[in-house]
Image (cartoon, rainbow, N blue to C red; front, side, top):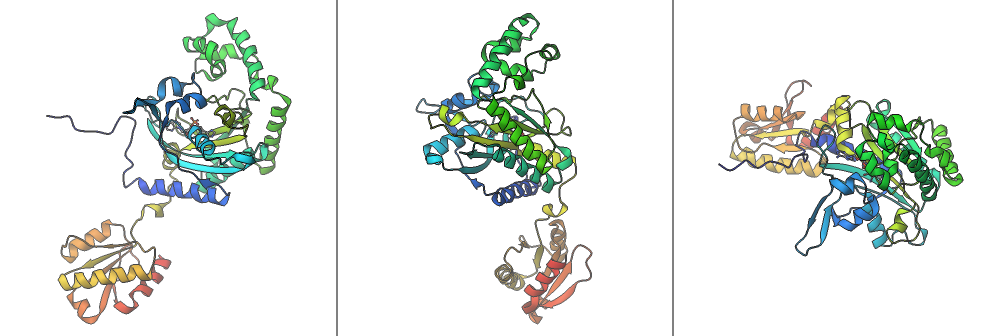
Length: 429
Ligand code: HAM
């Protein structure tokens, strides 16, 4: 017997029961981004592999071991995007959106792919909402991005569940100076490093800072600190950001070990983390990448952004029981009709209601059944009201109006007055 077909490990279906919460979350973020003046951009899911190698960095975990890369029929190496910043920068360059210093405030949403070990909050296909800003170099826009996420947490009821960690990585020159100091220090103690860190010492030494190995962490206690190597410009930028967050009353923790897993960052980096989800606690992360556009062939262009993991935020809302009750109700009213003539009249009535009450969520019974069966289906649909139309009602041009959630007795309404009665009842429900 053939093996039953299943979704790929780490790639999930989002079932109809879960969709309302996704739509609520995505809708809340989209409205907020509208309010702050961000415009949506949609990029392809597949890009040439070179794009990610050049932007994320050859010796990052993502590029070294997590990408879904394949040759297409032409023999070109393509990759399912592991993140959105690289594609967004590519699109901005390709269409000249940042030419002549034009400011762009963009956002995107969609699936990303990383071959990681799946666990709670970590998947191989996951979804991000990301924001990228071009041609604004000051800390004011870094602060706006953080203020915007802060407002989002407030709207979702998550304000007390997340904390903000901040760091500055400095300009690339400052980082290069720091890297030399760190490599000198660690090379003298190479034998005490774990294998992964030994390898990184030659390729990407800053990543050793966020090693999870306790012995390596102990070794780092006395290591040179990035903040002591910051250049004046980055220091000023960081102070400017902190002053703005202080003015807004947004609390943060400066975490000198925060370096992020992608190579393109400079100056500000930040992560919103929660302790409510176990190991995968970062729900939103980002930072500045002032050198990236130039590195990808454009003119020097300031860039800053972040991305949030939708699955993790959905999990957090569920864990903290912050899912608003009304979002799972998808039906306002369910129309039951018995007999051929009533069914026909019911259809016309339903279309009339849709004309009169735009946005009305109306389900018309399909598949027949006696009134008892139809009312059972109405109840199961979670509708607030059922409309009941039989031959008797048809003859008298009325319709039965039955509240399903304990809001009073069934009434008879004239068909002519139905739309108005329904609108009033729904507004009071
Ligand atoms: P990232 O830190 O790699 O940054 O990912 C951002 C967020 O995506 C994470 O904080 C997490 O919530 C979510 N995420 C990442 N990997 C997974 C996974 N395997 N399963 C579930 N959720 C995941 C970036 O991607 C940068 N492009 C962010 C950025 C935009 N920086 C500047 N602009």
